[in-house]
Structures are given as C-alpha cells and as structure tokens.
Length: 349
Picture 1: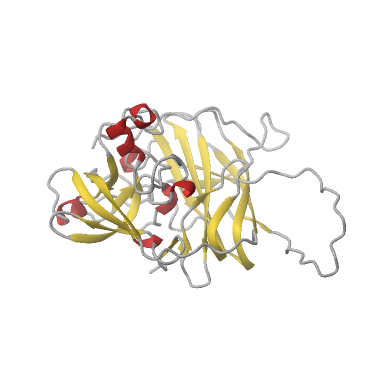
Picture 2: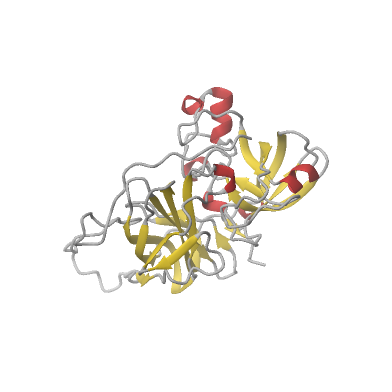
C-alpha cells in the first residue's frame, strides 16, 4: 500500500505555570473547590477516596521507542523517526512507563500532564490496566477533560506517552504526569462469549529496515500485523495483543506490532459505542473500507487523505505470504484479546 504521511496537528502550546503558555491538562477536569453537601446518613456507603501518584518519567524501560529523558523532561530523540506504516514526515516517540500497583481495584483513570507542546507537536496519553488474573485491558486514551474508562476492574495501572513533532521543528517536552485512579462503582463488563472476528482487506506492509510503532525493526520474512489503532499495540517483542489471520492457504497467529493502515484511532473491532472514533460505523467495519466503498467521511481518512484502498490491516511479509496472499486481498481476522475477558488481552508471556 502507499506509505501515507501524517499532517501536523493544530496548535497545542503549553508550559508549566508561570511560563509563557498555560499547562496542558489531559483526562480529567480539575474541580475548583468542593461543593457543599449534606452529611451522609449513618448507614450510607462512602466511596473510597481516589488514589493519585506521579509517574516516574525517567524510567521508560526497554519498551521506550525513540524517546530521551534529559533536563527533567521526556522528548523525541530523533525527529526523523516515524512508525513504518505511517510515513516519515514527523518525529515520533513512545514511552511505556512502569506499571503502578494500586491498593484496591479501580476502573477509571484520569491524568494531568505538565508539558510544553509547540504548535506543530502533539502529546497523547494512553492508560491500561492489569486485572488480578494477569490479563491486560486495551489501552484507552486519556484525553482532555475525559477520564479513561477501563472495561473491568484492575489492580495495576500503566501509562504510555506518545510524542509527535513536525520534521525539523522543536519537540514536545513532558515534565510531569500525575495519574488518579478510582472505581466508578458500576457493574463489571460482561465477558464476550468468543473473540470477535471480521473480514478485512489486507495489504502487505513490507518496509524492511523501518521501525514499527512499538520499536521493532522490520526484518525480511517478518511475522506481525498493523491495526489502525494504538489501543491494541503490543509492547516490543510481546504477544499481549495478537490476531489470527486466515487467508486462502492457512491461518497464522501474529502479534500487533504497528499502527496503520490509514488511521490511528480506528479500533473497528470494538462495538460502535466503544469505538474511539467513527462511532456511527458498525462493529468490524474499518473507516478506510467505508470511505473507499461508500464515500464515508467524503472518502477520506482521519487526516483528510483520500483513501486509495479499503485496507483495515497490514501484514508483515512473512505473515502475508504464509496465509497464502500474493497480492493484497481479503482475509478473516480474529482479535484474540477480545474473547471471554471483557476486552482484556492475554497474559504477558
């Protein structure tokens, strides 16, 4: 498939209090003061107070991608590095922070980010949780004013920072990330009876020597896939989020190690109401396919590019040929982490 390029995002400049610009707050509005309420009845159940902690940005570990920490901030290390499937016109870095154990089960996480973000740069915060049985939920975006709602109660919380900058332009500088977790008190999500499957148009990723979104350097005859959402991106070398791909010849189970094609926030395997974007599309229908086949979104992807094929998955060369494809074509895809665990991934190997 053609290698699309990412446009620069809109102005997003922030700095710490007292600097020239305001601080950027992600995932969770700050409440100014406490509302006056009547004293609870003697038998009323008072929910436990939220748990807050400040993430250690200096400990990104082996799962960090093109990120550096110096002078008290995280930055993009090399402004010319981008995920293989999304082009190389923007610098990209990803920092997967250490998991934090909370003292009780939680299912909602808010985040406040202290960062300087130039106009042509961007910072995203995602969080996920690990349940007591060792399974991970999908990553969930902690956006401005919006907490990340996890599909089940978890005992460990992990955050991931993604930084972008325009080629040749200054990078974002992330100085601090504060996370707050609590329990909404709602009923736990019902587990899926089986892993969700869909029929997708697959393209060959190729791009040997390029780097994927999780930091893997692509080799000849490689075996992995790219999906158009970071919600199911496995850490480098892991199979925490994997799919079964069935083509004309055979099926293969492969990990999700890259983001693409076309979109980056199109988790089309989730029910419509839970999709990050394109909530009016049915479950299992990628936005690129709808754009190509029926002119959805004026035939364009999330970045405004004209969609040239209906691809909802990219296959690395080894996977592509192993399932029996010799040209781009249709395959059956099963999203293995969605089965029986309420959206959780399989335990880490």
